[in-house]
Every structure is written in structure tokens, then in C-alpha cells.
Length: 130
Image (cartoon, rainbow, N blue to C red):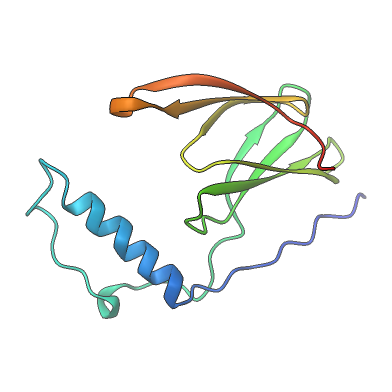
């Protein structure tokens, strides 16, 4: 058996709660939604103590498995890439909001929203860190 990658877990701290509240307020105040969602306070949120270590899984065209790590509300999102035996072979960072559509160990196709929230397709090359 191949050794599984060690996953760390992220505790939900005050900074994370502030980001969640900020995202909720931004959505709540959008036209068409304003007034339809109730007022939210820190005390009304029932959040777990930790974020789930994996939030999405995609199978690559080359047999790789891509695991999206926890959503830390940062400008980028980290993906772990496992080979066919389950060994961690790469860690890839993509812009937050980029919706991965097709992945392999050499490139990623993602839908990214542009001006006026119109999505367009972008190809990213997967390159090793130097």
C-alpha cells in the first residue's frame, strides 16, 4: 500500500469566522437578495471546530486524483494531486473562484469569471516550484 498524504486540519478561528460573516453580508446585500436573508451574528453561527481537510475531488484524465483542500477564504486555493497509487505527487495553487473543469498532471482547464461575472475558459500549465 502507498502511504497516504498527511493532512493537517485547520481550526476555525475568529479570523475565519469574520471572513465567513463578511462573505454572508456581501451576498445578503446584493440586489434581489437584500432583505430576504436574516441578520446573522457570531453567536448564531453553528460552526464545527475544524474545517474538513478536503472539500472537492476531481479525477484527472491521466489517472491522477485532485483533492481541493479546505476553504480558508484566501485569494488562492490549494489542490493536492495524487498518482494512481494514492501517493501525493504535487501541490497546486489556483486562484480562488477558478472552477476546475479538466485536470491532468501537466495542465488544468478552469472556468474563471471575468467582467460582469461572465465565465471564460483558461488553461493553466502545472509547473514545478523552483
